[in-house]
Amino acid sequence: MTRFDFTPYRRNTVGFDRLFELLETTGRAAQNENYPPFNIERTGENDYKITVAVAGFKMDEIDIVAQQNLLIVTGSKQSESNDNRDFLHMGIANRNFERRFQLADHIHVIDADMADGLLIITLVREVPEALKPRKIAIGAKTTPTVIEHDDAPKKKGPRAA
Image 1 (tube, rainbow, N blue to C red):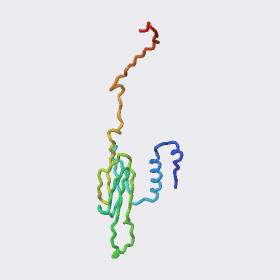
Image 2: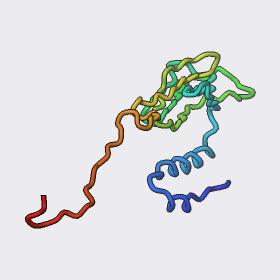
Image 3: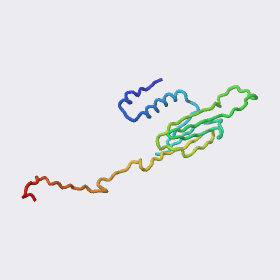
Image 4: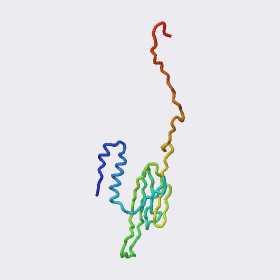
């Protein structure tokens, strides 16, 4: 396993602690998580789609919780009695899961749907108007004002006017 050392970057940057912690925790979590498989797709400039393979789960066995910068998808399989069944091979996973997705700022969950064993979560980036880039026209609102200075030394005494 390759572990990246972010120490040189941490000492040369200010305010990026959250980013480095996110990279480190994601790297550790990625080793242990491979169920259920998922896709992350960019469908537009500000539109995203997460597709999670949840074959064997019913809609009421899946919970989706959206918090600030975090999306948690949880599957809790209700226990079924398999006393009367004799499996020769059991390759379909029926275990509970929790999948966490770190979301960037201003990413919101719009919709979630389930079809053909796939859970499809639609997300959109909605940046507030105040944070969007603005083009500033030079000299559009105010014109420069000239401040007049009297550089000549003032005379003191009775003749000074």
